[in-house]
Image (cartoon, rainbow, N blue to C red; front, side, top):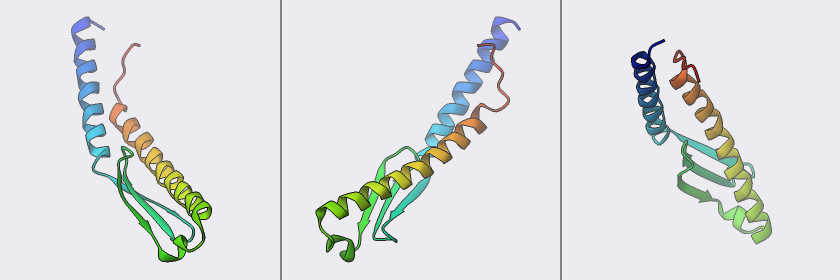
Length: 99
């Protein structure tokens, strides 16, 4: 493969990855914990959009609330990670670079 063709493929890959990253910022996921007591809404780029905490969750003490918030974040992040993996795999599919 000549250098010009390689550079064209690299530019195509860069463009696809940039578009995929931009799209990740437009996709929202919801992390839910404590049977819906806490919901964290975030983008697939990990930007937190909203945190919803029920009154019932607040009545169970700070330690329990902290655990539920953490669990909701972990759930949202796992969902975002799945979307990131798929989106980036799709963006790089079919681009064969020799390195």
